Length: 98
Image: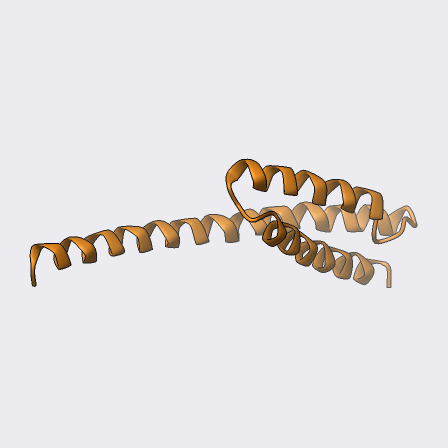
């Protein structure tokens, strides 16, 4: 193997190791987030509040869009990602109200 190919393989391995660490961070962060949203869902059910809060959702989407622009992440991707999470949270909240 040439030095150039060996160096490329080394860099590839380093990037993949970083990606693996970041994936773990994402999973644990999402798990922590869902712990809090579960508590919110229980509170909403206990106090007969609606499972969704469109004004809050709009605020969060706008906030995430601004953060994504700051971070150099495609805002459309960030909004789609948050929308997916919000849909999942609302689904869980509805379960608590059944």
